Image (tube, chains in turn purple, green):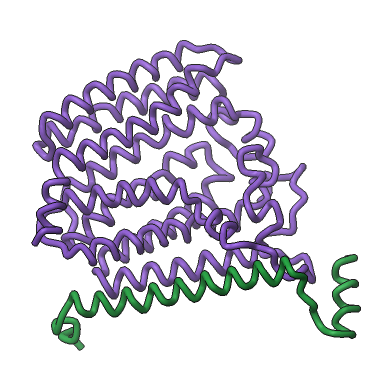
Length: 318
Length: 60
């Protein structure tokens, strides 16, 4: 909290503002607390992990696993919004979230997040398996305690290390389907892990002032523009071969291989453009940010079609 | 503080009196909680059927 010194007129993490009006929070506000857009990406990558996993899984069990993962991701989002309400209030992109807007009190967001976290982990453990539940609990803990509370306000490597939380869902899906972990879900984890820095740093490059005002030590704020652009290209250079790895390791077919090669080439080209671009120009950063979303979606969607879809249909049929 | 004082005064008279908007918001939240609990009950029921008799055979 110490980094945020000015601009944030806020009650504090537990919402100790004294008596407040009875809540006007709607169901929509609580849904917004769960970060539905992030949740949809989490569910999608978990679905791919679940679908490409070998063996038989009852569709109801698969649905239950995805529901628990979605709720767990929502819990992490709510706890993040509870703790980060002070910095959300001073950032343009986040100022209209329910807690900084005062529609949901911080204490209510905390209670909501903790309740969802507890229910999602215990339900996944009881109804699916405890390995998947343990991974979900670890993910929520990592996102909230390690990323939100510790790294986000103290380290320029915040989204690199913290990105691990967003990369675990395919492993949870795989663990839900098989009760174990192998190299394949770890490769999927690594793809998302190395995708996160170029994605978020591209955004941070054209939102640098926003992050600086909120006191968040994002790489462009701390290390500067040029250093960040070099780091983006470095991480993209690691990401692209990892994106092709499922094909090279024989986990996916030619369709996936061609897609990963083509999309990887575009990512590299955009990464080079970002390196060449000079401030205040930001077009290359915006292009990389937008395409990185499509890149991850394409890779996982094609993997689902190429590898998992047949298996998923067979499972539903049996 | 103004809000706090105003509410204390209302406490003395009729307790907390909710506005129509607050009542509507509370009702929608209550319905959402009820639905979530119903989904949880149905989920446990269906999953018990899916797992079959094996659900009772757990190591003590």
